[in-house]
Image (cartoon, rainbow, N blue to C red; front, side, top):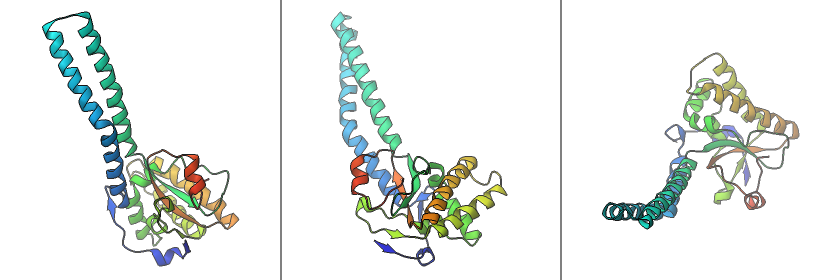
Length: 223
């Protein structure tokens, strides 16, 4: 891990559908995993449903009817699971990540609208002469990448500047009210980090899943 001024990390940033560019690869991996786990089972189930339906057309016996209902139920369950896993790929957020625990912050279960609007927010920050949000991320130690920590005052200045600008520009962004709410949560967390002199960076999290092992092995915390 290294410490660096956010000003030295500012530069050209790339995006995918408004998200930071690394979202594209993370999304692809999530979708591949979802289809790899559930896709074959779903196809087999659909085949069984088709076969049972054909058998049902030949003889309307009780067992055929039970088989159809059973396979239809199984297909619905597996299909729902697949859809849920695919949706996880779109549950992507930008959250502040701290070198040590802050306490009393609400920014972790948030950041979805900010992630979707990242490109627009970065453009607005550049227009205002502020460091873009992307200047503070998005390396992830959980993925074996080197973290670069930043002074929370720098991120706080960006969030406060964006909030002030958005207040003067109603409707400038899709879902602007939610973006504002999430930026306020990030700003509140950074304010506490500033008071405690705890460095931060930003993480791009793809999917809602987490567990105790993740936070035992991570170098920092979102809490």
